[in-house]
Image 1 (cartoon, rainbow, N blue to C red):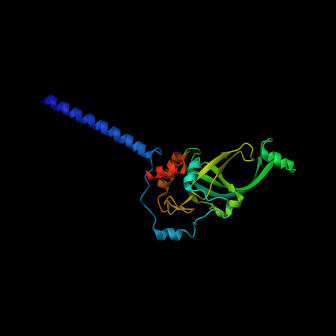
Image 2 (image 1 turned 45 degrees about the vertical axis):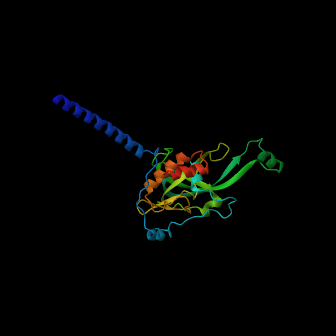
Image 3 (image 1 turned 90 degrees about the vertical axis):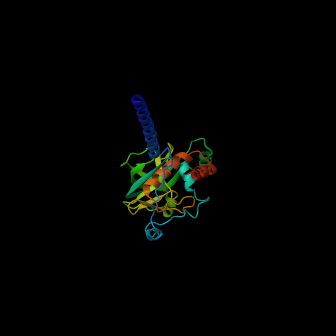
Amino acid sequence: MKSMTKIVIAALCFVAIIISAVLAIAVLKTDSLSAPAILSRERLTAERIEELRTEYPVFYGAPFADSLPVSMYKLLSLSDTVLIAKSTGKMNTYTDSYIFDSSSPEVLVDKKAGGTGIQNVKRFEYEVEVVEDSSGLYKPGAHITLAQNADLEPYLPVLKEGLEFIVPIRVVADQNATRKVQQYFAEAGFYYVVDNGYVLAAFEESQYGFTGLKAESVYKEMGYLSEQFKGKTPDEMSKLVNKQ
């Protein structure tokens, strides 16, 4: 009888160890960006969101754009990483010169017209400090610049000193440009971080309603979607989102 009792106790201990191991693995998966992030249910009130809009406006893209604004879905699929960053308030303008390959049609046409084959593009950039980076491209505390075409400046958020925000960025390396590497941002996917950790969209949200939610959960969700969307069609992206 005693031996049977010992066997039962041993079996129960073994089962407990297995359950503990399974729960530990589940916790690790939940904390990882390889699994869908769980959005916090805490949300700012509609009244508070309306109050904040005077300081944190929505931008609708440049009216002279030839095509429709890029959706956040598409922007996330093209982005290299998603950042939480804080602006230093330093802004600079510069001219980027692109030198095309000497045999390219652009150069041949340009030289025939008496040009040099160099295209000059005026840009602006803000210096920001990285707080978090979903892909690990930049370490927390690193100072980088976020740039865009100068013609789009009036249609993008102003990165005032101390402003914290979430944004997907595209890192472009071009050996033919004056700036060999540059990080680009847009209004789509840009979220102001306000009121001690909540977000407001700087663009007109259509697919998502992240405005008013907790910044940390929104950042994790965007980082996860950025990885999942790479190489996907719009229909495939919609199916992924509907599974959330």
